[in-house]
Image (cartoon, rainbow, N blue to C red):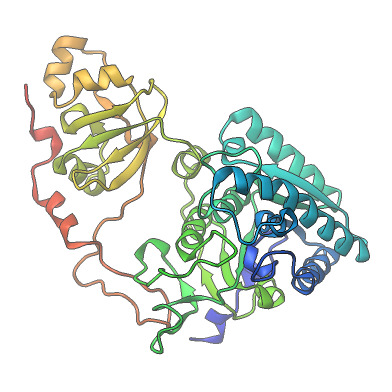
Amino acid sequence: MSSEQAHRPDVASAVRVVVKVGSSSLTLPGGGIDVSKVDALVEVLAAARDRGRQVVLVSSGAIAAGFPALGMARRPRDLAGRQAAASVGQGILLHRYEEDFARHKVTTGQVLLTVEDLVRPKSYRNAWSTLGKLLALGVIPVINENDTVATGEIHIGDNDRLAALVSELIRAQALVLLSDVDALYTAHPSDPSARRIQRVDDVEALDVDTSRSGSRVGTGGMTTKLEAARIATASGIPVVLADSGDALAAITGQDVGTYFVPSTRRRPRKLLWLADAAAPQGEIRIDVGAVHALRDRKASLLAVGVTEVHGDFQAGDPVLVIGPDGRTEGRGIVSYSHDEVREMRGRSSAWLAREMGQGASREVIHRDALVLTRRRRPSADKKPAPTGEGPVGQPAPAGERAAGQTAPAADRSRS
């Protein structure tokens, strides 16, 4: 790889940076805070702020810091136990941050968020305003998932995803993901043939083994970090995944870890919200012809391609679009309620015009309100780049080809 590729000027020059650190990079293997690790991280972030950079820290570690203080022998698995540990550990962790940053004459501010805070318009605006003001005042916000009050939100990858959403929220210029894994590899790091992937041009085209990558004290595995990278790069934000011990090199754009190239075609903020933060209110299942129309022709979803409707949604709600193989094809803002879509499913545009009038919308989901999350199969002559030497990709599963070999949804009807 050339030195030009290895150097990351967009990361090095980023003024507003989000740094996410995982539990295992802050705590001891058996739980509790690892003071030396926290001290080292704080020194790097304080120095970055002193050089004029605006730093937001998304920190895991509350549960891992808290469960030993409650006399628990291991990280709790039940929701109530995790929430209790988070309640205690959040205070312990924040106190450590406050003391360490104070030695560098840096003020910190605690911000607890859930994904819902980044979905509701009023909460979104409040979070944006608060974080912007803190950064303008030279404060380093310390953000964590609000584990104490969250319910289904406490699961693998919350803070990885949260860091990416926060990066979108504050319009960050770089996202640095720090963990106990020093990079993305072509195979599991324990495999002797595994090679570090230095640069990824397309997160969704990766062909790597992300299994067995979770930490003993944290909940985030490599899969969740790739999802965070996908979210951020789609917003035009470069991402670096690196070992927490390489924090200084990562934040200054050196050749450590794995660098994810930002997209040059940023989606509108409405679609970013739809793809990454909005909670689906239902599911619309479609046939192979509709899959072909959506993915290959960039068409709107018509009623004729709908086979099943699940959930209790209203017009304007976000829903999942599910293909015939059960995999999610995308997310969209539906034009009709669940009852209306059930009545319309499988019907042709001619039938809709007769029954609902010529002025009725034909689209169940308009293409401008649809985000596809499952990729088209690359052309046969487009082969993956060599592993470890640039972008790493894989063709889509062979089964996806079937969608493109059937008649378009608009050509079929049960009317």
